[in-house]
Length: 83
Image (cartoon, rainbow, N blue to C red; front, side, top):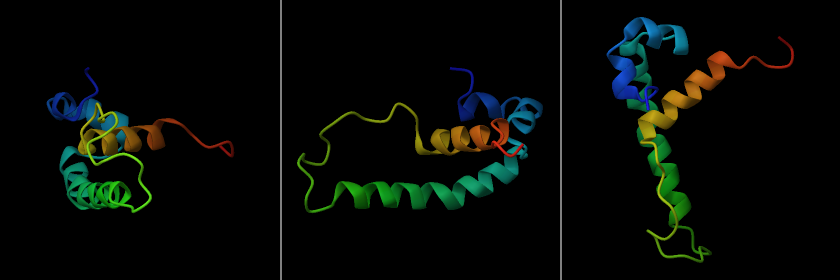
């Protein structure tokens, strides 16, 4: 898939157009957001009323950094109804 973080890092102009951020700025954002997202996911998996053991269910196809990238692209490219 071309829209993965590793591929888009190689094309900084395309990255800038898709996200509105420079690669270095996104890396700083990801460094702050990725640990928080992963901690929230672990907390969700460790809840006491969970019916499956940890590891049960499907895994994400995208890494957490790619999920953050997808979120940033979606927020940049899809305007709200007010727009």
